[in-house]
Length: 400
Ligand SMILES: [Zn+2]
Image (cartoon, rainbow, N blue to C red; front, side):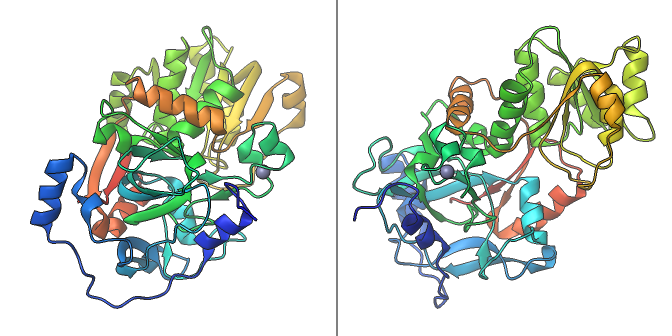
């Protein structure tokens, strides 16, 4: 029987325990890979030794804390064992808060150490299964890290993030922070040379998450006042970009005046330093008690009451996470009296992935990169993410 993209067989091959291979790892000498790179105009990491050799990866030996993060040079490359799959030579990957949750351990998460982390990235196609036609060897591609069964009622209506077998790279399947990645071809899109490496490196699930929240769920448009919490993060910055592009007036918060100043340069209309301030009251004071029409919240417990305090009559609140906690209190009287709509949102479907790739290709995703750090210093990058001091994406450089 022939497998189809997303079949359990294809996914199981990605879940197989990764055998330990001997080190030191044999590598193609850098001068040779650089020469091949210049001749073929492809990243030099594409010309490493063939895939039978171990790859470098950022892994965890157990869940719990960053103490378990290990850069490894002895990881077996994943097998391209099934129809509809592609092998990528990864070049760079932005970190997400999800990576920190993965390191700490998520409910129901089962890992086989050494477990490769990471849920984003871009790479160069090194191999394709015989039935793959929309990407080719040598293409630069970006990755959608949400894998769906493509056969359930949710997948059939185009809502892949609701799939009953939804899996995320790094969380349920080995992640992207490795020199090689094998995933379904449906989860990659080619990007032209006009997209710079830096633009590709800042792109990822934060952008797609923000698109679904702002465009699909809240349906932000002209006349909206949109409040976005924590403008240092990737989802918040992409949400700012999309809300401004739709003609909204955008409010942003941060605990740092420096970040607020930088957010103004990105287009923010109103800024609030949320340290020691009730943002709900502040918004009402500045809007003649009317409040905003949309709140984009990914903070959870610490901000929920203030988010509702800022939300005007008929307002929409969209949440994609709870970085400070998951338990929330909502006064149902305020909910029905103000006729609020409270929405959850996560990741994005195929159409939304294509939409944000189109934005990237059109050059409309000028998102800040906080720092670029080599993969072998991955723990340092995760510590920076954990500190919350970054403005924009922290990118790990994987390719040479
Ligand atoms: Zn499904």
